[in-house]
Image (tube, rainbow, N blue to C red; front, top):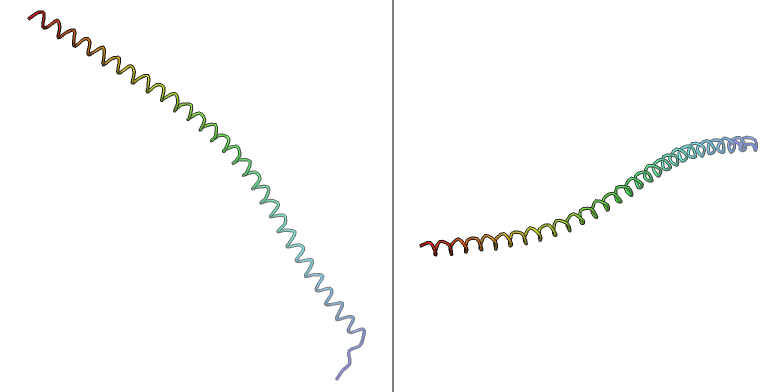
Length: 106
């Protein structure tokens, strides 16, 4: 069996270390790219979150406006109902008056 010299062992070990370093450098480059992508995604998510905050504020404002309008419509509906009742009473009075006139002319 052939003996491996110390220089040959060092050469093989050196080649292994060079290979390992190259692999680590490749992995570091891949991780760097992945990190850049994550930074980009986080920035996009922050932009979207800001947009959603603005949209949420707008929806809250619109809801308040709709609540105000609903309250206004309730008041208007009550006023309309009261006007209708007054009109009905007036029509009843006119009808009663007409009936009374009709009876006196007979």
